[in-house]
Length: 167
Image (cartoon, rainbow, N blue to C red; front, side, top):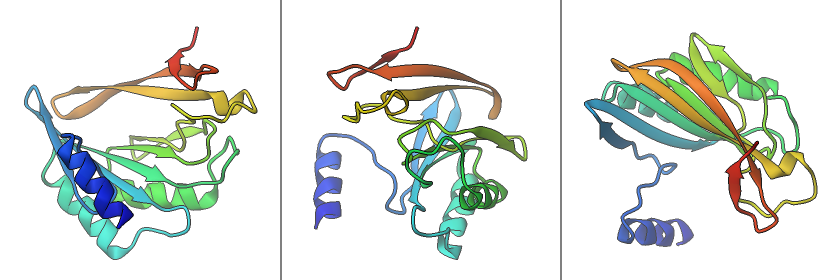
């Protein structure tokens, strides 16, 4: 009921969502961007998940996959995250942006595709450490359907739980 209510409210407000097996496609200046979301905190991708990624990749120029995964309050991705990232890229993910650990985690390129294991927090009420008051915004430059560069922008969260660009 909660998922269905959320989907109904978001749709009613004109907000797209991912994470329930649906590809969201947005076209900007002739480039088709696809967005998928998954929760792999307690699971690994199923054959259906990987099939969805392959099918989605065939429909868009750039496929961005958001993943809920990893261990909270750790600054390095674990072995499971790294294995999953490899599977996602091999099946068509062009950019992976992770979340769940509440801390910024390391990043790497897998087959020339950027993987950000955790972007940290963005708007959240965890004021108990410097790490939980930090996050990243990614600015990905695309040309001819290919990633040209990724620019990271650090953010900090204020005592009112709002993000701002870090100095």
